[in-house]
Length: 176
Image (cartoon, rainbow, N blue to C red; front, side, top):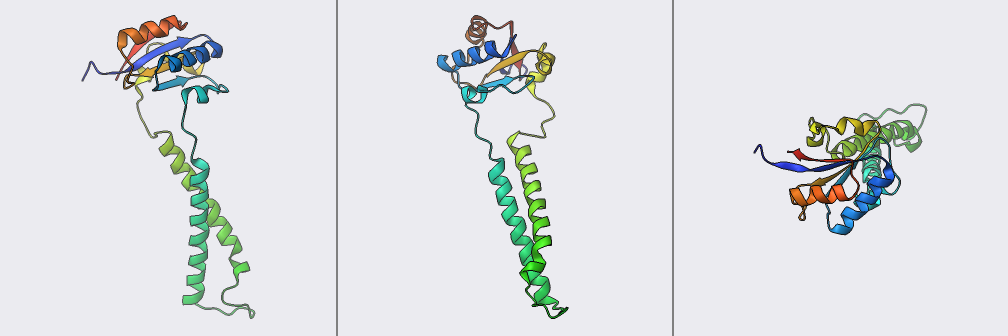
């Protein structure tokens, strides 16, 4: 177990070098790539072919569930405990608006929170690249490209040589 690898990590000085290396890796046949940067880089997601976020769909589903729950709850309450106040109809939909709006927003927000945590793989207490020697600079001024060991083309020696040739400042194997 101790000799299992997570992948190969390469450090780059600037976003242009990272983008060029990611393009080269993709063209060389590597598919399981990940990048770590101190700020978002336009176009990197297309090179890495990251999946499109599904948070908006999850939010819409939560909103529909919240509105449905609110309306059904209020219809049930008015049916089971009818109160005729001021001559209004028992099922006055306009009176349901505030509670329906509030539960729509609540369910949507909670669904998006759960969806975001699920899509990001959280809560993950440890990520193997955090143990890399120079990875602490990923949130400051360096850009990292990781080739996962599960990639079909991954071979430790060849992958390290490829990343070095791609212009990396340093390369290292990340233990799993």
